[in-house]
Image 1 (cartoon, rainbow, N blue to C red):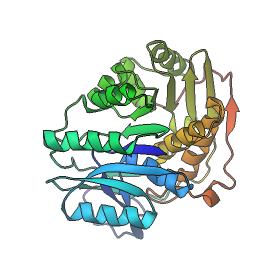
Image 2: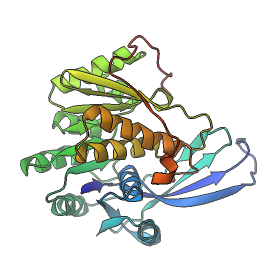
Image 3: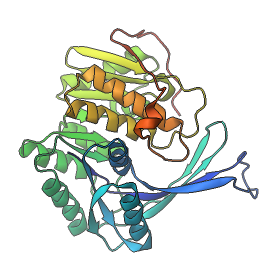
Length: 317
């Protein structure tokens, strides 16, 4: 069992257009809606692969009811915490070359009681779980130390916890020493407060975090693959996708595959390979669709235990 917490879930609406022109009327060639939010995406990816997962999330307003319906349709078990605010709706505008423009709403304003109910529900549902995963941005009203508090409480119960976030909530969580973190390139640079132009810089920054008490640092690097660093070891994996459709949720699918691999007994490098294949498969799908086992067919990843650390990475945006 892998339990996810998404404090700020969403309805994700994807709109497909030929090209985006600011200030003009566009005619969409199609669209879709999916349940969204980083932790929700992790649970969706796990469920699509037949893995056992429960998504914990706040639910409020008509969008909240729609979100529950979408999760039920996707076969994702969920524990809903009622809130007075309304779940947000995020819009992704997708162009044929894979360019994605996102418009994200802030989400509901949570009360202290609602925040505590989210934490308590996560702890209740995670009894005996292989991993607890807390992901994404925090909604208005949620304290910046929400993830840090959850890390301390999960560790206090002997559980294992992974964090995927950014900014002040992520920094506070890292200080509380989760077992695993999954920043992207930009989030890692923000966390260590300096640029990381090469794979070697990324590896060194991840090693500093491991030395500080994080067991596993997995850095998603977009088209440059992903780097995993543990105490005394590092590995790089990469899959080449020639016709990307959407990058929305790809990093979440990568995290889901990584944790699934670790929870089923794979070595960290092999679990990284699983994660990279799941993330690469997601890039070939429209909107924020998550890959099924059939979508993984033909997705190959290359694993390198001693990568070219001098290789310059994509520019941070």
